Image (cartoon, rainbow, N blue to C red; front, side, top):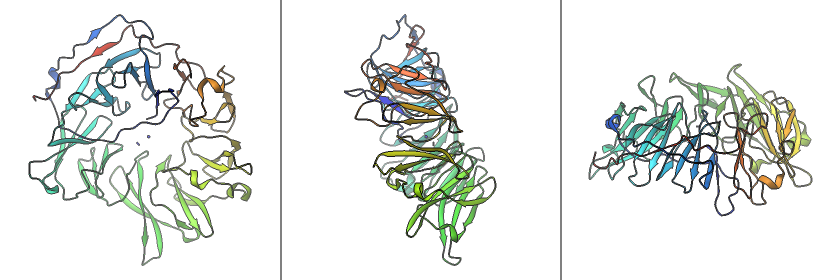
Length: 443
């Protein structure tokens, strides 16, 4: 999780937060093939717009907001504005070649391809709602007047708007708790998963939102009273469910909401009087307990451990509190070896095989082996150019091999490649197409 970071300028136009919209509402439309798109190519100059925000790149595409929050555009890594829409809100980044947006005037959800062309549309009204989406797939719920939960009909559509499956359920949580898990899988309520390639619904109760980053996802951690054992519950993309017993000597799992990345599952344990981590390697089927120097273990900032804390690129970035009460991070590999000794600063983890560490005076980029590749000051950026006292999370980690931040004062974005070189200086709007869509209220 499926995870989108947006750098939004509000008042001070500070570097910003991750943005991902929760699913809601609609139906289907196959008549989109006959849409009148009204593509008008205009001769625009560079930087004509006052840009409001800049999203991270994904699949060589990044969303920007121009002039207003609902005037959206899409750029490539050369800085070309490929297309733009007015009165639209962004729901997802591009994944699997598609993105979801919603019309602010008609409340219609659209699926766009990477050229900005509409592939399918889902008008929302009092009886039809879009409840989940991802990778171009869309799920709607429909009901009749005087309905109860048994009267909801759920429909799953492919990116073109063709119906994949339709079903009813007595699970009253399906409407509120349905998500796209990744890997062509949807979670419905607290009980069911629909596997699109298998065309099959599989019952597997869980209390958590499930993310398929790999071919296997962690569903839950259960406890067997008869065996006096905790078990890691797994499900793979073939729909097979398994349970792995967690050795008692590793401690009691503190949380059952865990994820798997790079075939590694990280589990926080509570072993009185101290907390710890254990990992499960799906490649070797081996559990191991974190074993680091006590001088580091005693400094782990447990309050700063984020939700869904996990390995990324086979590296774990631990937050620490130093003797000076300042924030530090250190990096471990999947065998608990120290890759980066404690460094004062902040980081959210490895992405694209690189680590971005925000220090007091600079931003430092490390490779997977813990070597310093460069700093932003090496590239001519002073901390005052992109940082303020009100934010601690900028620049953001790499996404699609690109790091993004905003220059304070000019409000211009800086998109840097993995070597720290700027991808482009200005947005080129010369070939942009302002796209429009028909209203589907009458359909």
